[in-house]
Amino acid sequence: MYLNATLLAQITVFIILALFTMKFVWPPIVKALDERVAKIAEGLAQAERGQQSLTLSAKRAAETVREGKEKAAEVIAQAEKRAEQIIEQARANAQVEAEKVKAAARAELEQDEARLRESLRGRVADLAVAGAEKILRREVNAKAHADLLAAIGQYL
Image 1 (cartoon, one colour):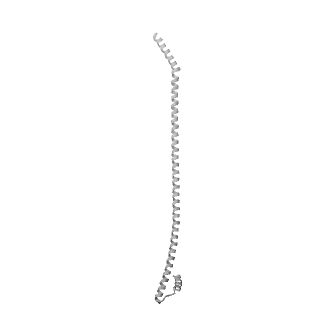
Image 2: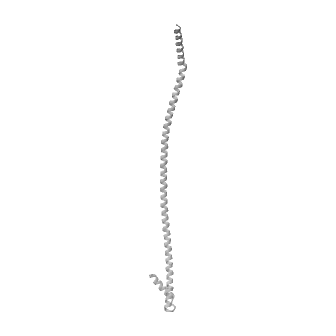
Image 3: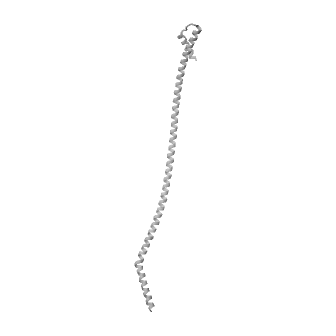
């Protein structure tokens, strides 16, 4: 009989302990577990949002780099075009300057040629007069011969 009373006492203590555990111990444990599950879920959600944000940021960075490369290429193309324009303008200016120098040189040559012709005409006239004097052994009117030589010089 004692076995039944002991068993009955143990069952009663077990039931009281189970009720006490269910009433006071189990709810805080379940609450802590639920909070932990919520924190883990929130952490996973934040990790997923962070991953999406990272992917989006990587796409934006790639787009920004691409735009930067396009702008750099555009700036380089504009710089090359401007350089070509400057070179062409410099060539045109050099051509104009060369033409001016050529024209000035031609004018100077023409002036030198005219001076030399005049000088040669004068020398020819002097030589002709001197030659005529020697031939005729007398003095020749220089004015009359100069006019004659000037008339002949026009045909030269």
